[in-house]
Amino acid sequence: MASPDIHIVEPKELKPAEREWLDRQFISQYLPILTPIAVDPSHPFPFIANGGITVGVELRRERDGTTMHALIPIPSQLVALRPPAASRTLRRATAPSRSASSASSR
Image 1 (cartoon, rainbow, N blue to C red):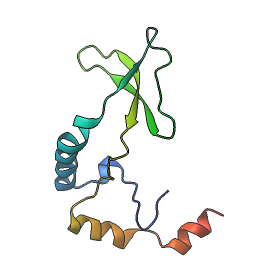
Image 2: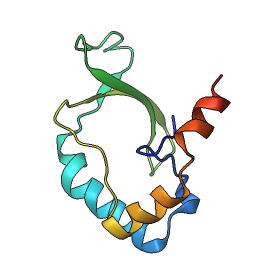
Image 3: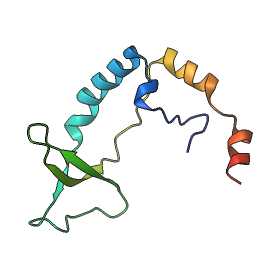
């Protein structure tokens, strides 16, 4: 999936300033519009909108470690996370070229 415009980054690869930016961005822009839908015995088949993107997640309650399953519909107006310009330039410089990525997918 990596390309010149898409970068898959592991959390351990982030610099502290990048992690802080992502945390702030997620909490202020994304968390308010994401609504998990429970999947449990009382809701075994929740509604999933046709043509949308829905992510299945396993949630763990911090206080007692109980796990739960949920679906998170991704709103169509949700834009991709875009890092600050300086970080974006650095990541573009290290991204694989289109010819290298297409050769490896053959």
